[in-house]
Image (cartoon, rainbow over all chains, first blue to last red; front, side, top):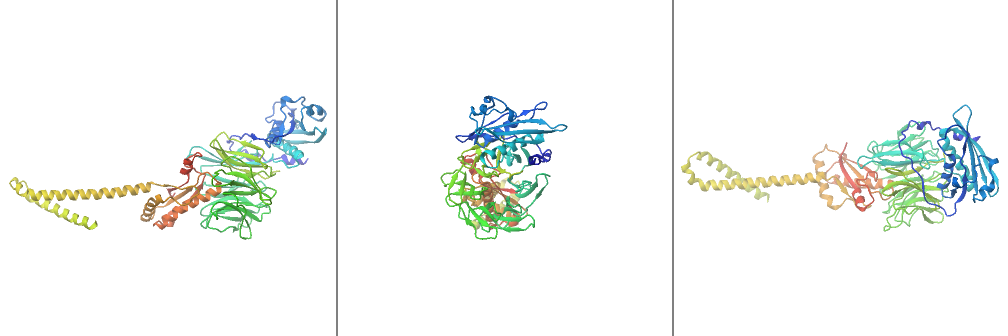
Length: 435
Length: 181
């Protein structure tokens, strides 16, 4: 029962956090033409009273949100099987369903734990693909639903799901001169949002450690931009930098040993790397113009960065040994904030194609073919953050004059929006796999 | 000009002295009044001229002070899109700031650089710093001391005005001079 241990998530550390943030709700703004039909039957609850969460609904939403699937409406279901012996393939075939998920939930005797038994069927092949039993507390029903979604997603697409991942984002709320900034933590879909940090001064650039246990960010709480690292389990935080000028853009190396950052202590912003074990600071770029927005290559040996050394921002790559940086973008007026997808070939970035066009979009440059795909068509898109499975990119944009978070699939075909009821939200940061 | 003013000052001072002496000696003797009318008139005219001159100088001084104060009250400087150099029309105002800092060595100010929201946040942080630095360097060249000036960039994080209009963007691309805490 490997899954058991995965579900024993330490959620208690959040009980002390302020529950303030309004939840983001997902709206699909654009989907694929021929989504895969999946029926997720309401899971039967065999205990007393009502459960707070509807697992089948969460699974259906998850699958629809990535755009590749369409969940069958409950009103159209001809039967409501709870387990394999109640499944009649014909009921689902005539509704043109390809996959079926059923399950039931019962209380584990003598405790607060519940047991979720679920099964997954391939309608065309008329066979059960898999079934398992998951155990967790009632407060973990959403986690269980995300776990099941990940398995279903992987079985159908062959790719690892990212439904059990988290996001961080920053919000700014209140009038000019009376703004409250908050750093939030939420499920990937914006649900169960928690406030990690609240300040009267700006908060920027949230970043995850590769194991998901720590976060780094920039806070202006001392009236100056300084980098902090916070432990998620204990809530303990420490100020990592206190150099004159800009201290910004903390990014962990994939191996977890280093923190790339931007410091302007010598007159202009340059990229530095801090060795977290030895506290040694290494300068990566040295140029009188602005070098900023570092991002690591997968091997932790190179750093992408933005520089305006030729006049306008362009993307460069430098190796840690201090070789001459290589320029990577040439065909745009403004190319910035680059990051490699997990394939190490495609590079997501913010692009303004020409001086005249005046829109900032999220785009992907294939480093092997040189081909550019522009994924978004809104005007003020920034801060792209990639899901750990590389399937989606979440980014900040502006809608009706407010900052909102959007996500787009890697092929640009599927989009969903996480609107917030008030204030500006920005700078999403998608967690690594946490299980 | 200076010379002329000086001479007029001396003439006026002399005229005032004579007028004063005349006033003393004349006491209340009304008989003597007609005799002295010419002299007194001249002295009065000179005194009036002197007063007018003094008032003019005072007005000029106050005007200068007012202008200086207006310059010192101008604490927000705006920038063109993607440009880090302040506008040439702000030169004189910034010179006044620099001289004021030079003559008040204990005064410290904070230069807060800002960008509009277009483009990436971290690059805008760099742009805001560059703007603050361009004003800092100009103040130093014109007499302020490096130790009186602190710079900080807020990038696009603290807009002066919300909205996605050119006008909002123009008001947000700025450096604000504030008293250092």
